[in-house]
Image (cartoon, rainbow, N blue to C red):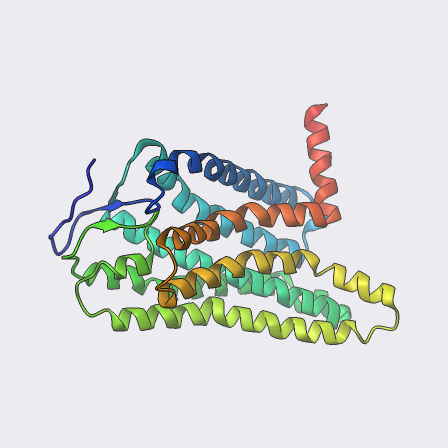
Length: 314
């Protein structure tokens, strides 16, 4: 279908352009995209299945890992089927309502994933700094309430975004130069004053990912202070080793997130295809890598996974 401008103030259909400047290789890009998505599905479903079935893994860290895996599954599934349809079948159409739902789900669930990473840092703080009170502080009720609070925060902060986008007129074009619907990508198509929408988006991003990251840094400052007061080097290394998986998850999640956020708002000289590739990495790579990190680095999950594979082979 040829791409064309649409002067309708409220178009019912938008057209996804994909990755500008890379249209000729999008079919080839679809292969690694599909493999990454498949790995994310298998990895996160495996984490959920193993933790659910093994009662010895019913501990705060693993419950929070289940919450993160659930969010990662929905995030990648919200975007990837449409991206693959675009790459494989040149299916560029997306209804405005579906686009708004995609915007809400991606942004709210990304904020939830950030919140789950934060409470995992809180779990590490309690386990290292207050080990004798770990079970009394992080009870099942507290874990459930923390998960619910993070989910409610994501819904409340990002539910206004679809309404803001719906009220805007789009007289410039109905072509979205992206592989999926993103808040800032749609804002740039509007032919009205969007300052309030941009400020709200910036505030919501700071109150979720930005604030979460600052709190994670604070928790690790306290953790490092406690660890380096331990008497022996072996004890320090062993204690720090319990944080290794979580630190890898933090780097995987926040590095592309901050790059994407900053380039959207301040990176006018960054090539569009670079920004869009990073935006896709943000949705695809953390859901694939997170279960791998915990599956490889966490002995109990790794052993249980090998037991499941061995049992099915027999």
